[in-house]
Length: 382
Image 1 (cartoon, rainbow, N blue to C red):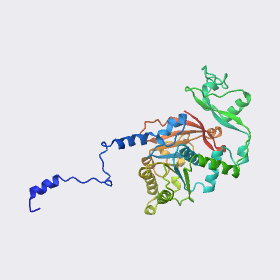
Image 2 (image 1 turned 135 degrees about the horizontal axis):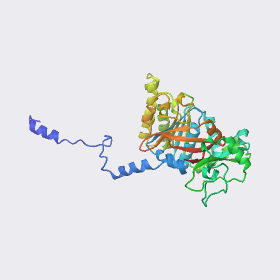
Image 3 (image 1 turned 90 degrees about the vertical axis):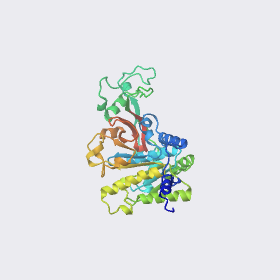
Image 4 (image 1 turned 180 degrees about the vertical axis):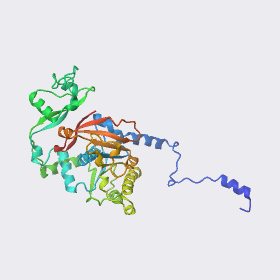
């Protein structure tokens, strides 16, 4: 001003912009509350599983996280997403399930009622049957001498290869030794499966389902919402719209958002001219953005590629469509199961990629399932 160049330079060098709330620029080490929030939110799981499975993946089920389950077709991904939904409710979280077309609304409601009741509406699935329970291999081979051991004898010779055990062998042993007692009483357990005979139960009907659903919903304070769409009609824009609607009309802000599943979603309008691979990438990017902006946990499922069909365990190369999926998640878990394991009711879950955690892809958790009674997790062990 007035041609005073020296004064102008002094003013320019001393200029300090006024910080505003919208600037997005902070001093990250100056706020104790922000530091505390960063530690507590990243360490407190929103969904809590018990025992070995909890140690395996609870840390990944936190705010600001984006988690995917990967498996081949009909591997039980939807059952797991339902299990995560119910456990989110019981953990005190508000949860929104977006059904992208894998099931209709009626199919989803029927399945969740079967889950809550622990019994099926199909009489064939209510017939007497063998169900899996956790046992210890040391107990089955009589190599345990601990006082807390449940049983007193084994059913397989010492030196038997645990991997060779089949459903037929366990049924034969259970019939031959009806007095055998499975055991999982100590931390030194070497987990394995035992089969327990369950008598016939009464099929679930819609009247029972109504009573069970109402009791459950009241107990957990109506913390779940469902939005169901035909295949290839759900978009990220629609998810955003529905979440805004829930907030404005019901003051319902979810802690957990679950999408079943991202692979059958459609691209947003601004992505329709992009090729298929980039459309896939954008949907995964935007799900990650959703977890960040809404400060919530987002969970979805994805199909493995055809290369996985004959594999005992999925590998990193068994992704479908676009490998960039791994770049956007905070964790991806593989659902592994052989035909014999399916007969036994055993699934193995492995870690494909997990941010902020040292992990071994060879280490898998074994989960016992009873899907005929709607339960994807009835026991677990390493």
